[in-house]
Length: 403
Image 1 (spheres, rainbow, N blue to C red):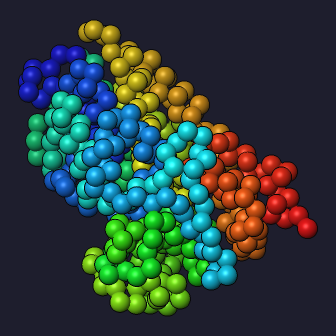
Image 2: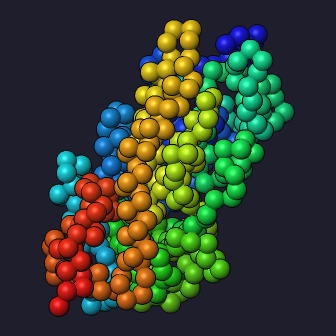
Image 3: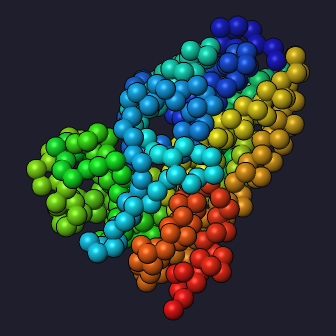
């Protein structure tokens, strides 16, 4: 790589400073690479989300040395309450997750994303806010040029794209051939909420399928309340959430004396994972930008942190002195993605299509109330702690559909 302006020259430029981008920058910077972390926003900035950090996400935060800071600011939930109706409501315990933490932390993205970004900067990464990337090209000398709106380009050996559900840059670069399928969700915040405990509530009555509503406590008296569907619904999720808040019996009890503290905001999710979307020989794509979102739960932070680690491992293996083995880096990363996620997410998509429909979901949730094995199968499928084939074994099918 031969760049004339040293101050604009980096080993790796990461586009997007959400969890996937910041985690990638952290892993690379702590191992000695010169890393630029770009974002179109100033930080801290809000990100519309359910705000839950799953056991797999907590495991990755422990690996990164960030778990203590997150725990100090987050609200701990020790179980998930599933609700189909007032009569069918019960907890799912998280104490048998194959070595994973036995709880979930809830921390608004306004705080969480900035913690991960600051962690990357402490490791040595350089942060450039208000950086709008127009395109990424290869120069005649083999270097990679990241072109910024209204500024000089950055020069690097490799770029990483971590722009979440926003696929515009990926399509402009030819890394995606068309607009990917979009899933939609919405959320808001309340204070003075009654009846909260140390559980996250997922409710399925009164919402579109495949999808669910949620209450994520952010403290004993505050909560993130939202809903989402796994398809491009003709009904705006912001509209549905307003209706749920005004009419749903469970939310009416919970929010009777509560005060809404933030506007209802909608957002999109991508669940179209394919290793073929992982980039090219000079660009790697991580997190939700490669479609890594769980099609059952809508969770993406754990996948963001994990894919960041996979990308960093591939990059570090390919940086050999003055040589950068770009093709080797891409092949290693693509293979790692396929090995870790292809089978798991394929079965999760099948489970979503099979169970998240009228009749099947109601039967699943009703039968699981009295069957511990079935409740554990749901937990394992949601959090990737076991083979997702558990949702299709003879015992599981008999528990659900047997006499």
